[in-house]
Length: 111
Length: 116
Image (tube, rainbow over all chains, first blue to last red; front, side, top):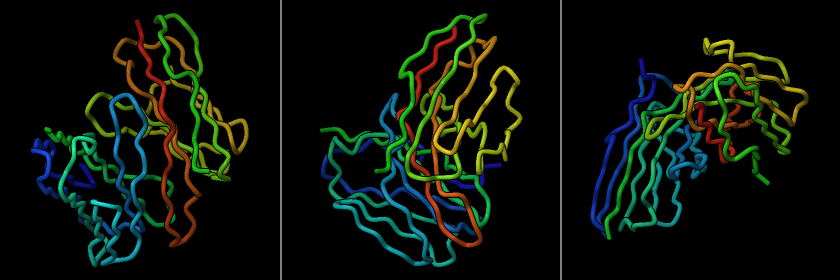
């Protein structure tokens, strides 16, 4: 059973379009991270959200943590080919050294 | 500095070989992780060390043997691997989870392992 459900699994869009990736769970997380990964490289941490309802912006990327800390979303405005990659969400539980990953979203932005 | 380093970057080994993967971090993190990742899939947790002690083993075959010599170093010893063990092996570190404190993982660049 996947603790974190991530959708969509694949997304192929044109440059300039907007998109949203979702990460949902029935469990409450102490924190939730979003990563981007290039092929053959390690995941790179984009953001950590910790407070219910929190919104963080990173240039054209907007991250939101649900009020109940069970879900999160990543919104990209005016996507660019450089945004292409595998996006992963991961949640950490209280007092437990283990992170649960979503299944990933493979994003392809075409020029 | 949020860097986790891993060596080697690439490794090709035969099924009878013994090799080791190495990971190092200097962020003062007391939790370190090994993951295995197949193409286009999320990382799969293998082992977790907390304060240099093995705290989680996700039923990993004994041909993978982790070691944490000190708080900055993490090794993964490999012996008698199978071709299906070919994957990207990722090391990560984080603060140790305590109470309701939040924490996050930082990943190394990975070792691309090919078993022939």
